[in-house]
Length: 196
Image (tube, rainbow, N blue to C red; front, side, top):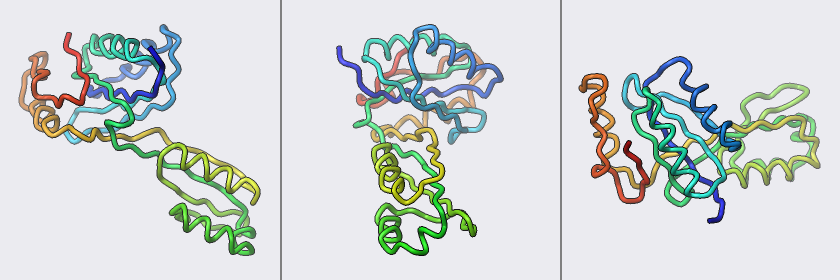
């Protein structure tokens, strides 16, 4: 089997120490995490982990099963890039004088949808959102103009075909702790989900 990029989405209770336990699952298997984002979900007290790795599907299946063994994990599943809508945010710091002097740079910023978030006498910080290849290409474009600093956020992703997931996730607000409320049949066929 060939390796490819997968996005693992994990819905969890918000508990201290869970991030560390999930990280150990990856480090024990010597799997590099390309991107990790944690955020609240649309349901109170439920958090969402978005983890990007480059692995084979078999390895990803095993990882999801292992992650779901954690008591606080409600559900873990994975998707390919074709099955999700995703973005990353990038910040670029460049000398302000270059922006003022070079009309070409101004056109490039407009072409990439760059938005100035800080303008100072010595530097300007631009924000660009997009997929990784877009933000990487913009680095190459700005380097000849004195790119000072660059940083990119972790991936945020939404599954394209997840019509029923929100409703089932809402049920967690009304169930007793430990009660099994997540069943595979409610999920779309495009999502790969594992039950214990």
